[in-house]
Length: 238
View 1: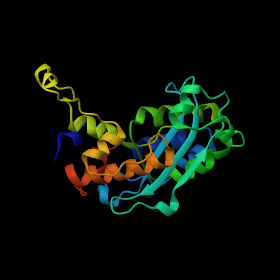
View 2: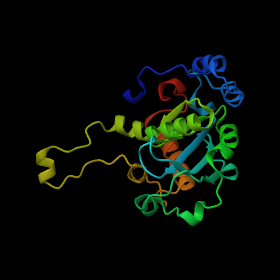
View 3: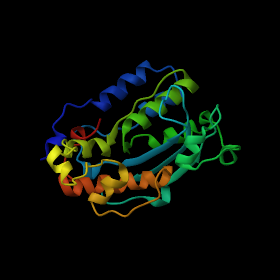
């Protein structure tokens, strides 16, 4: 088995049980009480949900979520009929550079709900499933901050990070000086470039639902290429 799986991981079911007792919010208590798969669960038996968000910037303390996309899947099947996307109206104005990036404009979000209005629906769709993201620092930080602003408590839940998997598969992404001289390019672990290495098609970038679909397909390809469906969830979940 590849070394990418040989790392100490948090026991998420134990963490969730502790949070049931610690939270003051019934909405979060229901989320934590879901039937979460244990670390020994084979990946073939895990219910995943690919998750992507678009934001007004990269700092969760000063920027906000403007779009969320998710799609449930397993290693064998992507449940496109259960795909979900939601625009979110932030408290502050959109930045010009973020509009260029994800093409969500003021007119798009003028009548969109606030994050507080979609939180219960979002938690129901995430409940008991392992979230799969590409660069968890964005999804984890922004969702934690958004929930903190609404409920006064943050939110952490298990994730598999397909970017982290690529980073561990390709630890030496920068070529040496001689290879650079010969025209060798660095190895990119961005979503589109990672998908290209597995022969997956190109999709429109920076669209929450499309990126969620792309992330789901990428994990399926990573497991099929480098691991096994019998690999333990605890070896790749973070």
